[in-house]
Length: 246
Image (tube, rainbow, N blue to C red):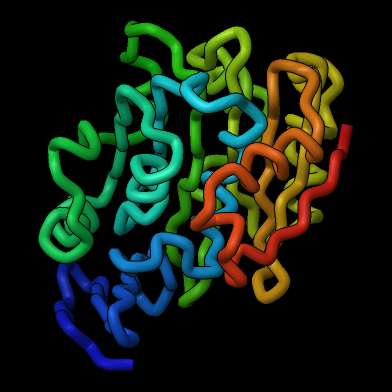
């Protein structure tokens, strides 16, 4: 793996590394994003952040909010496979925004990229709701990723307030236990807001992705919709597990 770009800014080390045609973004040693323009599915966590969109038929997901953009891998995947009418990406780190534009190909045609704190942005937002909200908010501590916002009752209520009546909330968790302990599962008042809840995992990652769906959903429909996309259907890297939690 080669270092394409490297710089320390305000005591934080940022790196863009290459592995063949694959670009990777690291912040203080924490792996934030991976993108290959020739193969959008790379076998990483970003693949399964996108997958809950396939609980819905083609064309159903029109408005998407991504909280925590990083290098923007999931935004490329959404554009490639879901084709929503609008994507808004909210990113706190201005360096990530610069690198996403410079190296990872994020353009105004792909996303409306906003430099803001995600919590404050949602507090201020008064526009129409979103069919899909992807929450991937992480910081770094001692070289390890840590949640930037606690997945508690208040945070779920705020996210749900901006979700369409039939929408899906997707959240990245460090582990399956963190997912199971979040308010979306452990707090009855919050879990009751969603008709179906799923866990997505990958073989070589400890992360667990929670998908909180506002309508009754099944993994069979998800896999059937994925199978309709030839590139995804044939990809050996899309080796994921999905399990219904509620």
